[in-house]
Length: 297
Image (cartoon, rainbow, N blue to C red):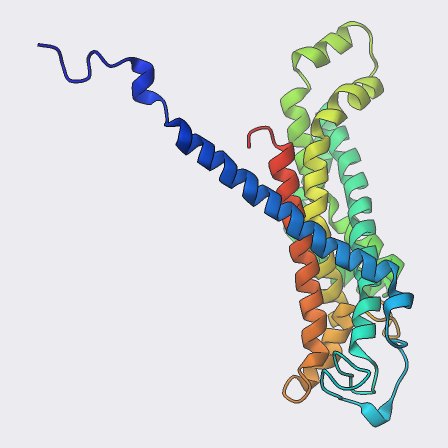
């Protein structure tokens, strides 16, 4: 007597129903598309606000109007209210997007360039260079990045350039470790060995065969880290170590409003919402890029 299922083809026992697979793929594609749409819209709003700030801003962000200080939202000429000296909150939020996006993008550019170069050096050449770079990275990871940034800025002084430089220098570790790991997995593959065999130098191998294969990982990390840099810059401005006080910034506005949370909640709330929405947009866009560029997904 045949055992149950003995005459059933093997492929029939392990294959999944085609409609179920199709539904899963469509659901994943829809989620991925929604990430892209929502993230792009949120980032587009922030970028347009920064680029068109002088045009779309309803008032001068530094103009004081003591007669209308602490005006609540929806007041005439002040859609989001005013702060303790009568400055328009909406105008300051719009101009604050310039600082946050500038710091986020430029700091990621510095960190990505430095981390990629050090990761290439450590992963491709190895030896004492790899040991030194990775030990420095381990030492830096042992110190919280925000604490390290506060310590360095306290020595160098606040300012937009110093903030970008410090965030770039303290943020290279993630790129360096990822690039080194990717290179270790591909530097001995067949196409790299073939390039060495025909006499290609290290610069050509790295530029033509290694960097194109790790560029996707660098782009995804950079997109996700922009949001982290924006939060770090806001944290530094909140404690008075970011941009100068006369420059509108979301972190500085939140710091100014902490003493008025019970009576004028809008001073700190709207800059906080701007930070949240911008970082959310960058994270959604980074998730979409990860899904698109990662072949395993």
